[in-house]
Length: 105
Image (tube, rainbow, N blue to C red; front, side):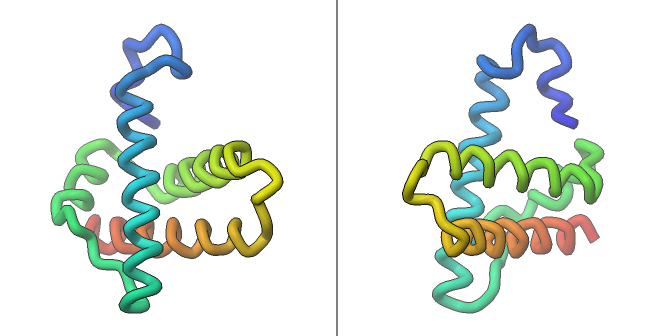
C-alpha cells in the first residue's frame, strides 16, 4: 500500500511512514476545523488527488488508513476516548477522504 516502505526493514521505525502519518493526522485535524467553520472540506493542497492516483491509491486503502488513524488516536487518548470523539474523527477523516477522491476524479 505504501510504496515508500518496500525497501524498509521495519515499518515501526520508518521515518517516511511517520512523516506520512503526521501529514494525515494534520490534514484530518484541519478538515475538522474546516467542517466546524464552513460545513465542508476544501483541499489546501491541490496536488493530493494527482499524488494519490500516481501512487495507485484505491478506495480500500482509505479504509485501512482510517482504521489505523482511529486506533492510534484511541490508544493515545486512553480514558478520554469516547464515541463522540470517535465520531468526530471519523467525520473529519471521511470528509478529507471524499475531497481527495473527488480530486482523483
